[in-house]
Amino acid sequence: MKGRKLLMIPGPIEFTPEVLRAMGMATTSHVAPNFIEVFGQALERLRQVFLCPSGQPFVIAGSGTLAMDIAAANLIEPGDNALVVNTGYFSDRFAAILERYGAAVTQVRAPAVGDAPALEEVEAALKEHRPKLMTITHVDTSTAVGADVKGLAALGREYGALVVVDGVCAVAGEEMRQEQWDIDLALTASQKAIGVPPGLALLVAGPRAMDAFRKRKTPVGNYYADWTKWLPIMEGYEARQPRYFGTPPVNLIWALGVSLGQILDEGMDARFARHQRLSKALKAAVTALGLRQVPVAPDKTATTLTAPYYPDGVDRTVLGHIKEAGVILAGGLHPAIKAQYFRIGHMGVVSASDILATVGAIEKGLSQVGYEFEAGVGLAAAQAVLIRQ
Ligand SMILES: *Cc1c(COP(=O)(O)O)cnc(C)c1O
Image (tube, rainbow, N blue to C red; front, side, top):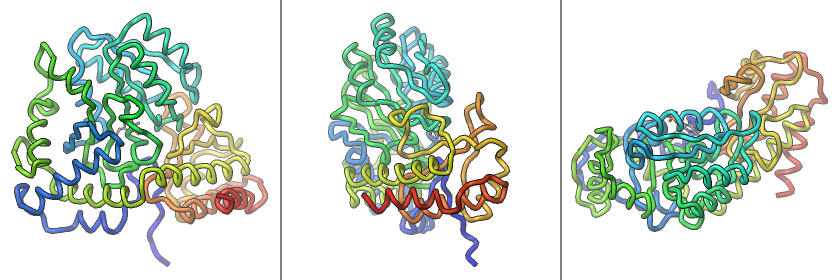
């Protein structure tokens, strides 16, 4: 029997063999001609994956939290108003980061865990506070709530706010059209739907964000995050003229180039549609098994992630049985409900057979902890969706 288990958590995800091979290649100099080409091409591809032809990409060693930190460090000056559309744990984190750089933060909170604030409430806050910047968490990884990024971004723009999207659990999985939707800055990390091992903070800044950065009156309060340092590096590599600020993570950037190539080979529209189809199948299975989900309504739900509550009498020990059946899932994260639910990530190279394997393992685990249901009912529900679409 193969020892390998299927990793179905909201990052790190499963990576393709080609991506993993790039991680294992002999590391070259960061100014070797073949690396310069790969880095330059990765920057060009990032623009295509974010669907932002006029954007300025940044690829910087660090995790998704660094990407959030970079956004705040470069766009906030002490005393600026900022608005956080709060859908959970990672929205709280963005508020804390913005405050660290001196922003006066207003939060519009969801009425309950699993919900998202209404557009009208966000509009009222925009009207009242006229923030310089507004943040949206595309997929709140603690609740599997998916925000209406398109609607919120349009509102933010209407009131002159720079729209910043934390797309760490979303970019390259959820539909996001940065330029068309008027998003000023979108960011993610390599280990989620981008499909590269952890270690890269990825951002694409639109012209208004770059303009706001250039018009700053105060220096950026973080040496490593400062776009003044990084912009010449990104422009340099894209022009195939390497420059040095901090040593780039050579193998990760090779892997990024490979993964972005695979993403673009599939095509963004096909990729969004695949994520939607697989999400629908998994969510149908969860419902058929009698499990409720954290998001309060289907239109508040992410397509990269599913967060079911444990049924009555079941707790996180079921995750151990599911793992023994071959699939690794994640426990709860949101402090208010942490012990009551679990999370299934389904993004990146995830396939229909991964979904069926996951549902099979969940059924096996549930039966082992004594939950009563008709064996195969989840599998049938998932398969019904997969066969239809
Ligand atoms: C994972 C995640 C982050 C944090 O990324 P790290 O790489 O763990 O620092 C931020 N926001 C969202 C929405 C996430 O899913």
